[in-house]
Image: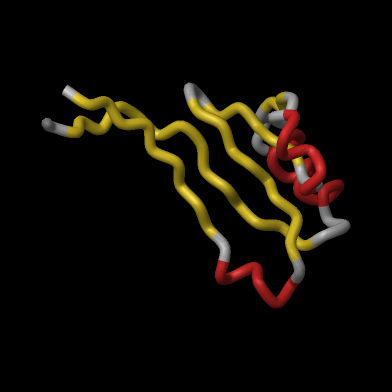
Length: 80
């Protein structure tokens, strides 16, 4: 079995709780990224999702003391 990298699916960037407005202003207004609906099972986590080319970016609210510890990249793989 071989595993082939297909593409990045989404990345997660952590922002401080309560700072969604500032993050939206930077990512949506300044950079022009489009906010999309967050997956239903993740809506309780706060934050918001963006569309970036053919992938998604999860802007996830978290406490200030864990900001530097949290980063996630989701990669889609294909078994061949």
